[in-house]
Amino acid sequence: MKATARRPRVPAPRESPPGGRLIHGDNLEVMERLLAGGHGGTIDLIVTDPPFFTQRPQERDGIAYSDQWTSLDAYLAWLRATVERSHALLRPTGSIFVHLDWRASHHARLILDEVFGPGGEAGAPGFRNEIIWCYTGPGSPAMGQFNRKHDTILWHSKGARWTFDRDAVRVPHHPKTKQNFRGDLEGSGFTNPGHELDEAGKVPEDWWVLPVAARFPVDGVHRVGYPTEKPIALIERIIRAASRPGDLVADFLCGGGTVPFVAQRCGRLWIASDRNEQAIALTRARLRAA
Image 1: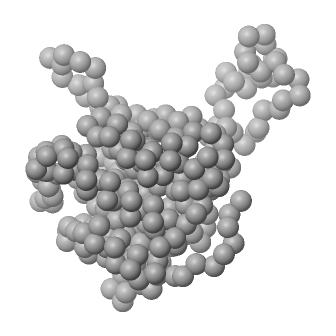
Image 2: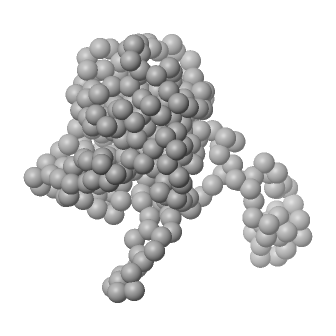
């Protein structure tokens, strides 16, 4: 169940697109300002795609940003500060989804478990899911290992109650499942006569096969071409599952603005920020054109 207490609304500055607040600034500083302004415990969902600790500058299509750190300790200190401020900003029923790859996801899991709790069990705050986002792509004939084609998304809830709208994210049953269910086949796993197959579909597993954003054309709205841009389908599943219409969704490392774009399209309020001026410009243009 959702808490019904009223929450303070974050006023949108004049230059922001309708539906939310777009801020140019460092993520830690932006979160600190929000906390100092009395907005602790007001956000329903934080979706964040932090630097992956690649230790290299990035540039694509004239858009440049850096993922270089003096040390792993410096990176993890920054990540911990981000997680701690996120925890303070979330409502008691709020959740955070942190998207990383093989370089730092194991470190992030430990930090999230320490700040939010190890969770795992029903009614316990903290860890809810480790989601594996799988995608395909070309490999090299000379590779000496399996092709790395998945990212990790860690979901933690702040409290012992959280939002999960299972009906908003159901997917169709596999035809074989329907066939087995109707036939009540021994060994199929569907031999319980009192159990009915939900025609609306099933709740997805915690591994998602979805194409990367680069598979879609750049049109300035559905894809803007930002180097770290994530596909709409990925973000939409998270937002529809872990928030309700009218909830407040935040992304303090918004890049090309997929999170605020999807949040607005799904009827959520939003806050988005980034320290990169090009990211802010792309996000603003994208939201105004949507």
